[in-house]
Every structure is written in C-alpha cells, then in structure tokens.
Length: 124
Image (cartoon, rainbow, N blue to C red; front, side):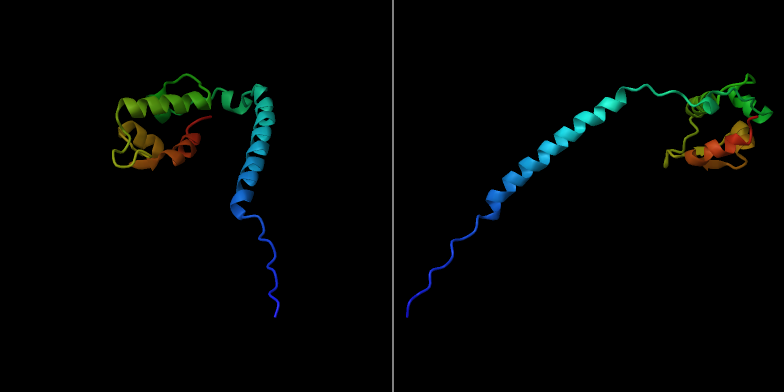
C-alpha cells in the first residue's frame, strides 16, 4: 500500500490579487491622460440660448422689460427668488410664489425643474 503523493498546491489567491490590482491601476491611469486632451477644445455657446427674448407683462414685473437671453431671464428670476426668500425652507427645490410670481407660474408653488417650462410661455 503505497501512499500517493499529493500534487503541489497551486499559488494562493492572495499572491495573485496584488498582480491584478497593479494591472487594473495602470490602464486606468493610461486612460485618464487621453481623456484630458479633448477637454482643451473651447465650447461655443448655443445661439438659441443667446437670442434676446421679450418677456410678457407678468414676467417683466420680475425681470424687467428689456429683451434678454433665456439664460439671463433665469438668472434674474433666481436673484428675485433669493432676494425675497421664496425658496421653501423644508424643500429647497420648491419655490413659493409671491403675488408677482403667481401670475407667471399660475400656481402657489412650483419645483425648480418645472420653472423653466412655465417661463417659456411668457417669452417671445
């Protein structure tokens, strides 16, 4: 009765893990460098956002009568909201309309995400 020799144990998985970790980190660093190169191109603004739009009488009471690009209208509207502290204290994403904004929004409270859509009805 001869005893059979056991086959030599394979390399432990702990020894293989550091090699894998080293291989993973090298390609990640190599991929990061080429991704930074296209960022050097300068973005050009979309002409549709820069086109001056005339606000309606209701919106003009908040942002002024002069024709403004859509981006400026939103900026002035946020300045008005913050100046008059119209953001809801419990949920900052909601805006509580005062008398002027209620005419623009058509309801007493709107979320900041639906605000841009509601303003689209008040510009030409």
